[in-house]
Length: 160
Image (tube, helix red, strand yellow):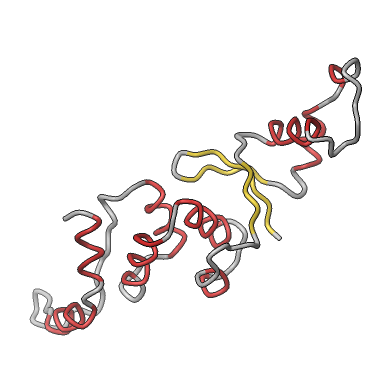
């Protein structure tokens, strides 16, 4: 079954609830818990499922979000909930998830070089650029910024 088929099934909540209520285990007793495995999905959707804490109580909402959110919003959710410690309720309804700033760099050193080039450390003459210790700046930036990998993509972020 494909991801899209599972998403359409999740929209039929009442039908799913009826089937779940009728499900019996090997001993003829009602099934109390279902194992949910996300097998055929994009890597970003797998990361979203892990941060979401996918289970039988929330899988319909997860599929709706996975289908309607763009990749940037998914990354922001994964970082906000999975790494910054925000709860699902704090960020799920915020389309911008503005408590996370993401920078498209692989390493903090790359962010340090960007900040210097952008002039955040003032005007630096070309003759002195060779003497800048970008690794030291990156270590300083590590107080506020963090490197992570989501769905195979390396990013640098900061939480507010």
